[in-house]
Length: 395
Ligand code: PMP
Image: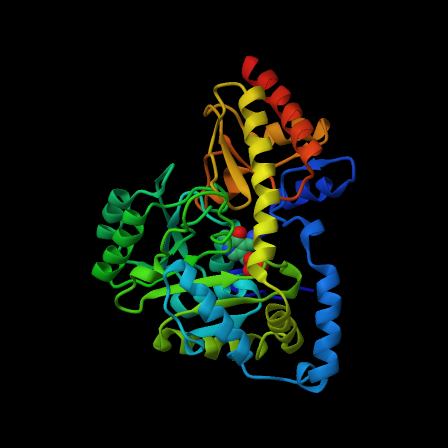
């Protein structure tokens, strides 16, 4: 058999990291590898009541096909919730998607031809890199510092990259680094996108999970020409299993997303959308988000404090003000993939950072997740990791 696959499949490869990560599901492993929310926080009892109510009151509609744009009352509620990011939106500006991951895939489908360039942060979200790769694009990574993408570097890159077709960014508690952009950079990004006539994809799954300080205005809030596509999701503020996210964009751009959604899956799950809407009617999501933040803030503090106590000084790490991740940078000669093998011998897992750089390199980095492990395991796991690091650095 010699079945011919599409050329794009050459770029879509199973990652060796995924193979390594399969090991991390063993119960004895303390895993800082995934990006999973804490399942003990999922509102299971509430969802039992919500599901019963939806089926009781509107069972036939909940199990029927519905519109591509999504369930109107839910779109209205999402539009209202976006005010906390400085965005004035109405239901007309919102398309419900199957997670924000679908919004990423659609962005690639809508904006990219083979050979086109995506401008992104260095490093960036692996799931977005892989989604865009399927459209046979190239990546130009913009250098970052502790405050996200460096605008002077972006400007230089835009000047010499006429093939650039979109800018993809995660300005709040970025995956993988946990970093957040200040307001001036957000404004400047919009100015530069205006100058070079490029769409911006602002991916914001973590913005509501801010442990301290005020939520800064989103990049979309500075959008004067309707070129910012905002991707939101309930995966981290509620639960990922429902697969409910959204795209907020100008009507011209949103219509393209609606068209490709029809080709992809017609609509997101009718029953999931109605369940989420009923939850928002019956309960206060903001109260739930506060509970999530309290737990994650505690876990962040424990992780960072234990890192300060046990990591050798050569290991530099970020201090996230929210979200799920911190990011570690080691001296250039240390390879985090090799380190991962040693950590696994001590039953601790993390994600080596190399694959978050679409053009490779930077193997001296890794990502740690603090949302998914209980407090005692965070302390124990970080201590063991500290031992591995000290052994490696003393060689
Ligand atoms: N964007 C980023 C930056 C993410 O970290 C994730 C999930 N880990 C997603 C998008 C996709 O999330 P979902 O499809 O569950 O909304």
